Length: 240
Image (tube, rainbow, N blue to C red):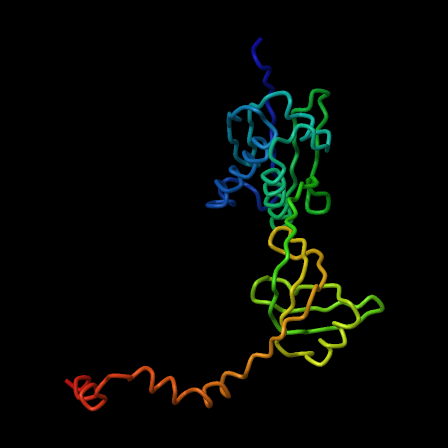
């Protein structure tokens, strides 16, 4: 039995919306609409037409896509991440250009209408959490709470890391506020961000200020670098 197809139409309208007004933004918009349809279809969606005045895209897609696009539920979505990325891009365009969007193609003839105030809803994404025990180094920015926790600014993560901590470790770390610290922690990481964690132990880590370290070790570094080298001959060679 052949797979049934229906057409689905996305009609963008507004004072700032036409193929001429969109210019080079037309193709990226078409790609986002395509991605939205494709995320809800088992088969390759086909762009049937693009019309001007308003901007109107018509696609052919499998009937199964209707549940997600018109029912507001994830049952028909095959790729939630792609669906949400497309809706974010389209919603941004609606706000930026003060545009409206009408979506036609539901089996019951319903028409969905969206604009900057009533945007296409996103769907909940399934995240894959990673649990790990790791050493975290960085500046201790904050410490406290009835149930103690610390906040560390670490080069290993884009966002500050918040970790629960036992009172004994909290007292030890309190002496290092606004200084570089190290801790071993059990953490849960989602999308590159620590969403929860607890300090298991405090690392004996008090890095020396670089200027002080160079003052103590600079001469040794220079001596090691020129070990076995005739410095006078080396300097003369550099002058040639």
